[in-house]
Length: 506
Ligand code: XMP
Image (cartoon, rainbow, N blue to C red; front, side, top):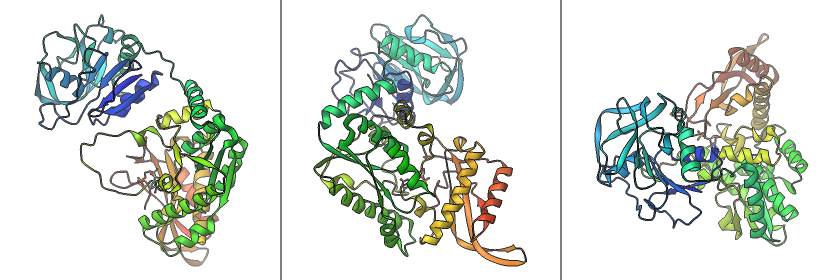
């Protein structure tokens, strides 16, 4: 495997994903807590950083067990650190170098640069520049403005890149990363979804033996893939619990429950609609709604789990981005919304925790799901928040409002599917607003509800842009909603991006 040391760059996870796309396994560690590296490690990459190496607070790794011992590649800050700390000089650049540049000089005889094309485009993003390299360091690529765009150290396996090979705009970035991980480090490119399934199933068998395991299914991609993977390893020793909180999409509970059964999962469907609705009665505050839903979920799940004899483990669909200990540069961030509504489960239940997906990125979970034979329709589903429609009904929640919103949402989502727009959208849904507006139907004045439709493009939900859905489509959906859903006389489309808006309205 490859080890990546993180210095807090926004691109660190991207480096990891690009390495994994080459079917090479890698792990990210904060620069200050690197474990002892054994022979499984074939090479090390140093990430970029928002800091300057000249900054008194700059992150300083201990490279004693690394430099000169393992093949080493410094990227951006990593490259500057390797120059600065071993006798070179890093200075602020005259102009901040940001964006596309072209490699004017390339030493293709160097193993790292083999196969890189003439005038190859690279992506720069740095305020400092390497003015002087230490002895034994040698330039292997330059752009017009950046003389030291890439270097090697002559008597050890160490390289530095001032540009970012991991970003899409570096057109030969993949070749360079391939040269490093495959040619230089000698990693076999055998880490595939299929091999992940085989090894994980074996490991789960050993770890769990004949123990009983319980897993909460949500209908989402992560818990489904975790369920199918565990089922492959321990079969009927896995019991899945799928709770109907009454806040799911129209027909969702039954459809998803049926598909779980179809996949051979041992699943208990729990109708807890009344429990949730009673607990939410009269509550309007978004964070209070989330807390209530989280608490009731734990109560219901706990009660069901206790019915299973001798259960020892709680399985969860946690994925890698949730477990990477990120190097924070801006200090602790403010809680905008409390997302993780099942966070309290393990401590309260006294069960050991097993998380078979905690090494995977989201796109890898989908590929593993595909390798496991899970249907593309299930794997391609939009994200849906744990508290469901409760945070899309602004104000207090009643059964009548849920019914209205389910119908509206269904027309919108089905419309997206029928018009082949569903897969072009990252997430979509409808909000029921706490206002009424005047309308006219026939000769009658109406005074009814307003709904807002939202569709966004995103990669991870951290930032998002509203989707420019075709006017004809919006017109048709709006018409259908007003004609078919009793109680709604106005439809609006949300054209705000995140930030400063968020995806959900609550
Ligand atoms: P926001 O509204 O914060 O949403 O821009 C980002 C992503 O997170 C989802 N979301 C939630 N998911 N529990 C969840 O499990 C929550 O309380 C919650 N709130 C927002 C949202 O649907 C979007 O995908």
